[in-house]
Image (tube, rainbow, N blue to C red; front, side, top):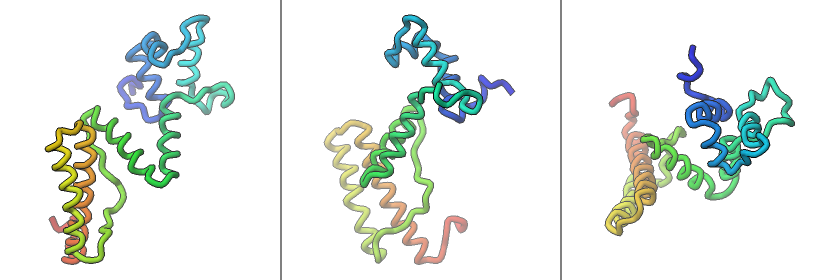
Length: 168
């Protein structure tokens, strides 16, 4: 199989494929690497080295791995999950995708009425954001929050009716 056509699954594979597409000159300029004395290309080589086949101490973490560390660190902080999701949603939006949560949706209210009423503030914030002509990323974030609230209400309703997604 041609590796150039295979989606890169590791940070190093991504950097390698990206490097093949845009070239060293672009990456050296983008990351402010020194083109002198070959240090920029050496950094790129370290970023794309296959870890199991080289000495760990000779490899510098690439920017994808650092980005992943930032996300993992955010998850350790109160409120960090929302910031991490917003960042990933921004990346998804750039490439025409939409972020969805993999975990099961759990209603956070005790009654159906309370769950329904809980939808309104999120929907109102979303609509007010549109009316106030906020930037698209802010509107998309509020749209996601409103959808999550509606998903919780639907999950509550399905739970009370004894019907699930498989009955659709």
